[in-house]
Figure 1 (cartoon, one colour):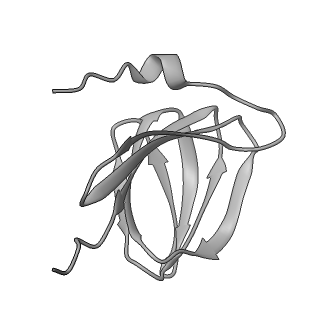
Figure 2: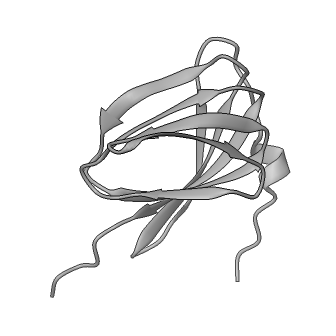
Length: 105
């Protein structure tokens, strides 16, 4: 068992998003993403799916099908190769859990 205190990983920058990786497992990867109000991750494609869970604040999440405003305790799954972006409407803390393909043995 491994315990993580996510509050210790919360760090904001007024210039850029801060991403703090804390778990790299065989089938998934977890990171805390912190965006100060107004900071944005421009929409871009990624080669993995991701579950975003808003822990604090609110932000606009953009996917291939449009945009949605998410607040604390709300989540969104974006598939592999789908466009994704985030813009913080308030100071925003997001848990990102990447869906990684299992090893094909």
